[in-house]
Image 1 (tube, helix red, strand yellow):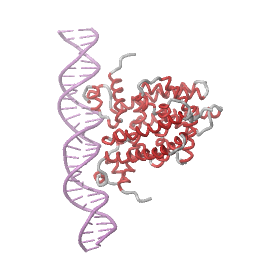
Image 2 (spheres, rainbow over the protein chains, first blue to last red):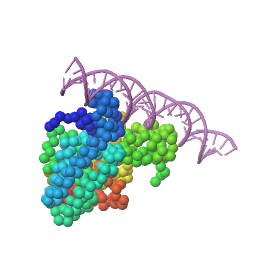
Image 3 (tube, chains in turn purple, orange, brown, yellow):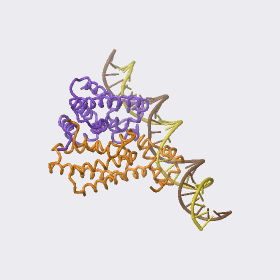
Image 4 (cartoon, rainbow over the protein chains, first blue to last red):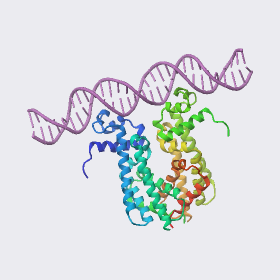
Length: 189
Length: 189
DNA sequence: TCTCAAAACTAACAATTGTTAGTTTAAGAT
DNA sequence: ATCTTAAACTAACAATTGTTAGTTTTGAGA
């Protein structure tokens, strides 16, 4: 693990503040105080407040895109693919909880990069939907409403960042297993 | 249906703006422009920006609290109770989509009312958890991780406000039925 | 027509915002 | 020791913020 640059440190601290108060409510002076420096000094490392948000959100969006591409290229069945998607979300949510909060809550403030983010997000959802449709066609999944299913699973996975920090000792594998069980098999006896 | 007061109109328009940009990014001038008046004129109807958010969020929080109390007093089994919870979320999400967005995204800006909101929320989750535990004890539900189950169902229900506006012709009953099927029975064949 | 209250207005305020310019400090390389 | 450069600083800016004070407009009931 190589040492964190000053810029990376700023992005990390900013993500944490964004998570707690939201992008708009965090001032450059808040961020500077948290870094132990003056607001003007931040500009030796970043170009603007906007750019901080963009760096945080787009890095994660690209992680999801890359992860999804690996999954769809895999030639396993749809259940296996869904399990891989769950793993992907759990992994990113544990590694970058604060950044995910910014992605989920503050993407509307991305301005110039907003359209690009929404495009990546749309593509991700399309791939996810394809997997569900494929599974129903192949008879591996029940024939339920695809849109409601997509929404339901994705809502849970996208909310992981809210829930993970409350559990002190998260076991990545155990969480993914429980989620797979509940999301795929339900809870009814 | 009695006529909307000017204050109610402000709350309704404010909720819509909060949904799109978040509480902090909406200025009193934004809200006034949308109402067709000047910012100062808003203060003939509301006492502060804070108070607008509090009115919006706490009204909904109390709707949930009242709905949950009706459900737990009911003497049906846990599956029926879970279905009633789903109905409650669908109903409120359709009736007050914009307000729910403010509740879910901007509760941290409630200031003096924040603790009260969090208390209502905690109680709601506790009742929800009790129902799940009861269902497992009675053998009506599979013995799965209660916390993950609670989180999973609640994440989906809390995200309804994001998804409902995208579906032009939402049938409340059909949506609730699909959700019950997917959340309770899963999708695996 | 007159009254009166609700609800709009103009003008201004003090504080806070993101950001820039120019300067000083600190520390490793020569 | 000197040089160099990254990274901090002080001071300031123009714009925007929520809000108040005081005034005018509006419209329904007397």
